[in-house]
Image 1 (cartoon, helix red, strand yellow):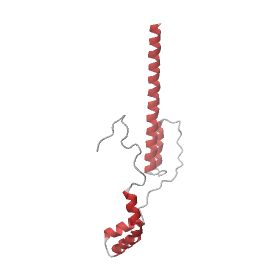
Image 2 (cartoon, helix red, strand yellow):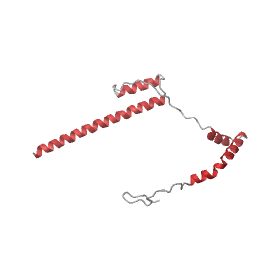
Image 3 (cartoon, helix red, strand yellow):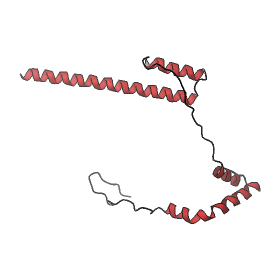
Image 4 (cartoon, one colour):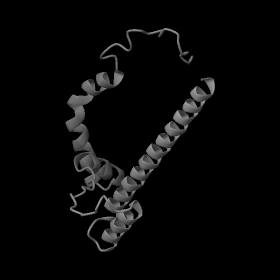
Length: 141
């Protein structure tokens, strides 16, 4: 398949037509047989077919997904980021938060640290650029 090239008009400016999906067509055609298929899978599973039983149960009773509870953990945002991470780890070790919540919290603290670093670097760069600009105007006058 040919790749689109930047700057060239699209060979299909209107995009894909709506309802052109064969998946929708197949789904609609087979919907009336879904009950029969599930019943057949159930009977095969009851007869000892482990694959059919698993397929049936996966469709009827999908696996449960973990649900995170809301945590109430007090971490002073004025503390250094390393201290905030330590408090999150301590809370995890003490069982106050789950390991996944601890991981998410420390990842958020790390991301916040990178944002702070980037902002500081940008401010320093802008200050250097301004100083160079000031020096250039002084030399021309």
